[in-house]
Image 1 (tube, rainbow, N blue to C red):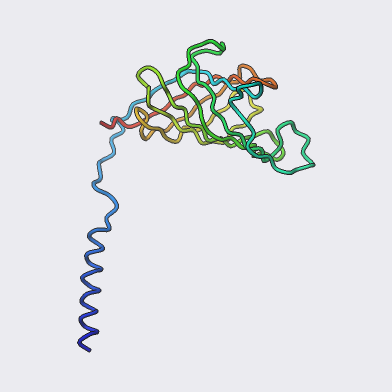
Image 2 (tube, rainbow, N blue to C red):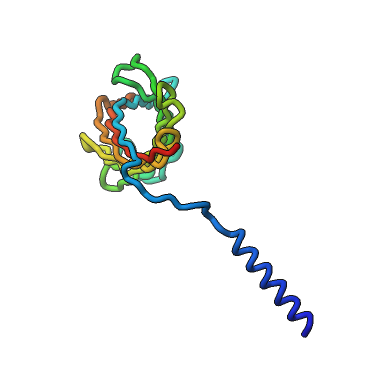
Length: 186
């Protein structure tokens, strides 16, 4: 009986100590929508699908024989595309878009994409935006979601309007108009 009560007290002390050390947050700050900034960005994504230096490559493709599309359902791409100030091939490079895209529409041309836009010049150097969204490839203007970021874009949320400039067998150039809001954390 004495051993059981000692064991009981040890368990009570251990459990009360675990509750004190088990807090998963440090403090809560009030939400202030005035402490957010809105940023508009305009740039071009340049993608090369072939040649000696492709910036998008097929990682995997589903074994489907009934789909005659040039890019069939289930195709997974890895990308590392330059972000540039203009649609011209020699325009200034301001960063890169790295990520994955999978063709996810059986009966339509749609992709699900995760891209991280990392900026490498100017005041945004070292900052990035994360996009994770459905991307209807056949639409002339598409809207995709901005779901986060880092650096100057911590806690970012917003959207990007994507307009195709060039799309052919070897080259894709997309215009991005991005609007994001994020906290002014110091």
